[in-house]
Image (tube, rainbow, N blue to C red):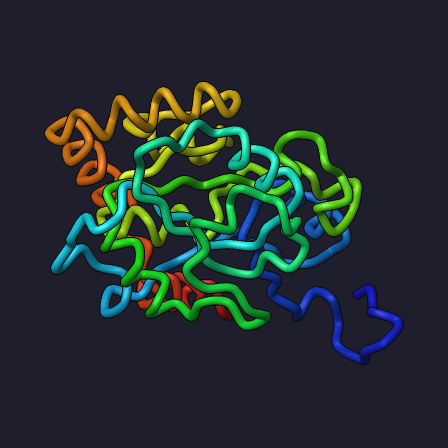
Length: 228
């Protein structure tokens, strides 16, 4: 068997779990046993109980340049907006400052984030580097993926409707949720869905059903079943 230079463990004895299958074949070609297990959620944290639309839109995440430029260009007039997370490079003159409800190095924990999702009618998943900022990814070969990230799973599990960047698995799981092209498209679609409660709630419920089996317990069962 092949051996890693830093370990005496045979690569054939290793089990590698990936949260995106994009590079799955590269691990297998290296002689490793590799499988894809998707991101998961905690039902005791990520649930739709006691939803209350205090806000029209919330976003929790890091203030990457592409996200800042997108959100700064969205016409927010009249909407109740809340932004939270780690936004250290937000310019002093940015119009987004008026929406910030929390900003520090730690960001929001999962419990507080899920609570904020339940307090909003809508949210969004905006991938870093989705609009060409390669420096926002960890490497030039990591600027695209197929799998959804944890934000989409958690938003869906809390019953929160969201706009989304198009991505392979997201398009398969969430055809009921709209994608967007630019800030104007984002703004117009957001207002349409905010004005149509029944359609928005049906889409959010369908998205929740799409991830119903993606709990941490189910992921642990899948992992245990793969162990020799």
